[in-house]
Image (cartoon, rainbow, N blue to C red; front, side, top):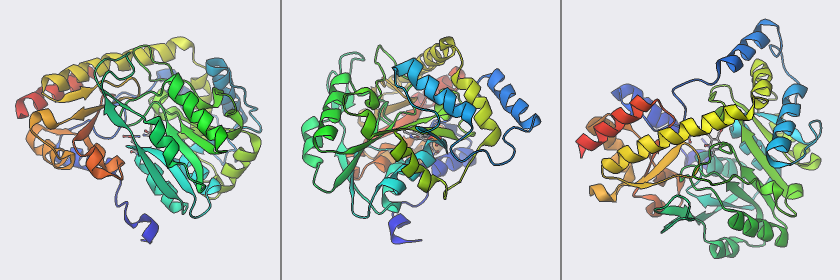
Length: 392
Ligand code: PMP
Ligand code: GLN
């Protein structure tokens, strides 16, 4: 293994899901739902397979039906207009979109600013592209942004400004944010946009949890801010929104020159992927608003079940405004090391969770935080809560 990748080892998600299976634990680690997405969309995939649509290589940029549906979705939800032929690229999940974008845009030695804790593939992809990551730490603040109550992880805008150097090539943003559940506010996004314009930076924004926002928080795509559309690569995915994480259909929306750059890398990663599923996702994106609203309120109910359960078990809960993850502080249980806690958890409680420290360069800043996924059936969340409560 080369030096660029050696530090990353096996992804925490694979490690923890294997641990859940080998110990028979409830898996609240890796973020995937335990209920599949809509029946009619599964049927659409079956129809595509049966009718021979997508069983051979689909077009490199993605099938036209899906590119049109992605553009229509951005227009309908956010008033963002993208040309399906020149400004949309279908990828093998958001994971490939992230990899191809960073491989395409970074020169060796370029600095990338990302908020830590960050989704684990960011660090690995920056490294594979020869870039240098510059973490800006989100820290717990009292009162959050006022809509959720309690503490939430927030960005220090001065720290972000100070992190920009003449080597900074791009800002890598993620909102709603995995693992903290933070949704960046209009003011925070406006500051990020101002900084990007002022310092002439590219922005890559991972918005895969765009449909999972709660408590009156609003998902605002960075590309909607002044001066941003032309410098922003927006990444989306069907995996989260439609509960088909195994289908791996993601996308990029961005101006033609950037699509073309990302495609240059993408064509040598997978070339294309997920043929029949592209047809099904095109139908999914056109589902009525009622689908998205029901999905959101279902996840909100699950969040409240697990948040109550974790609090009852003695953990401090950072009530997430977005995503399907809850970050907790384990110190009220007398524990300080999230790694040790997560390693002991299957044996002690029959539950698997993720130590947030894996998402930090400054590991000590993330040490007492542990992430639990709530995209599971209510009875599973209740059983996990009960087990945690009796284990401490
Ligand atoms: N970005 C974030 C923030 C994620 O949480 C995930 C998935 N878990 C991805 C990207 C990857 O998405 P996909 O499954 O579409 O590759
Ligand atoms: N995105 C999911 C998570 O954060 C899992 C992704 C993966 O397994 N790579 O848990």
